[in-house]
Image (cartoon, rainbow, N blue to C red; front, side, top):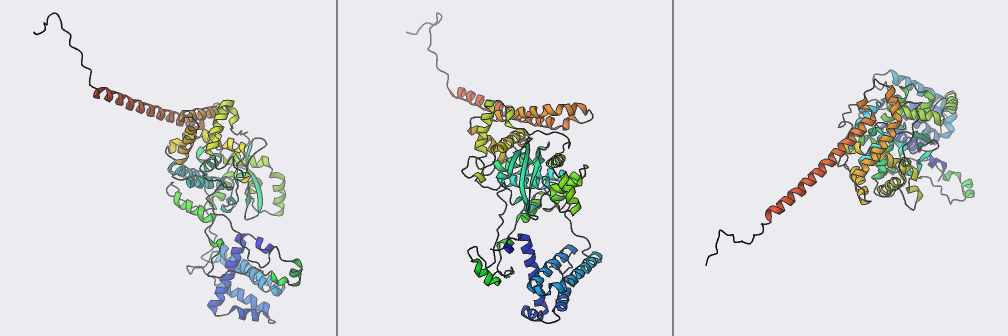
Length: 530
């Protein structure tokens, strides 16, 4: 294995695609690759290479025999140029500058032609569209993967993430830092940058990222290190002839043993060609968006745009938004990002994404607000609910105990609202089954949820009293109490139905049983017959 094998999978895939395209161009023109290698040894090899690249890209078309978009053309140009210069490194000093000029001419041409003028950009996903899709998933869910799909959509939007960023998200990357802040640590696959971003609970349970994570973990049936177990794993394939056991002296005597990466054969399909995370997200969007009432054609990149535009619309400093999304900036902007991109600023962006005041202090709910007995009871239920994420021998399969307490708190907090959406959903059935298994009832879950709602509402009463123009019926506390009352009404109806059935059975039992015959007693008016 060499450093060449450590290049990102997307980079290697793009380079291989460009090389296959160039060789296909040679075959169409009837020019063997070996003949091109011979021509590259002539005196005019530099001029010949420029002419070949020029003709290859000037008339490049796509699969539908249409001109490619400007972005696609420039990607073919960059990757094809770099691959050819790797094959013929002696021509780099003479041709690199001229090829760069040709690339600029090609880009300007693509900008002015009729087709391919603009780069096709994914439409931004608004928070209203995100709410429609997650609400649809929560209300129609039938399997555990539906909850994980909702978690994917939430995390992509709140983390300004690319789809590939979630492939390396592990359970051990969830933590609660100083100041009682919920953190998610992950790796930006494209830029190979590690980030730790803060998350706050959303007032709307359908777009709350903490609730989405809790549901995803609760529905896992087997231990796994990945937070999102349904995502395809990334596979790194080494194609170099060098091995870790190869002696260094042999490598120094024969440096040609480590050849540049060559494109795989057309018939052999590597594991990198298999559908990845982007395909999975696009399939979820294709299945959910239209049924949820979303008219835009979203892609996996729509959430990165939508979250950033939502934060920008509230007047956040662009440096904070750039830092959270890990966008590449110029050296001047990097200085500003270094100064301003501190955890405090990231907290403000996270609060805005959760529809909160950026200056508001948001305290995470946890089990410490309960008395010691109730706290033990809830943790007793939690140990059964998150059996695939706690108490395991392997540390990488476990979630931090404090994180589990927080996730369990928000799962109980939004239990009435989730049940109002779909009373027979797998998550509701599992939560109630775990509570009953530990000796508790649905009434206990409702009581715990009501107490958490009262704790969270005590801090928002002041702001509600100050804002007299706001519609009280749309306040989250009011909506939670409404859902809680509806669930209590359903419980009472169920109890009444059971009592009615029991009364009917008792009445039927008395009706079927014949009355015992009374012994005849002679009265004074009736004389016995002789």
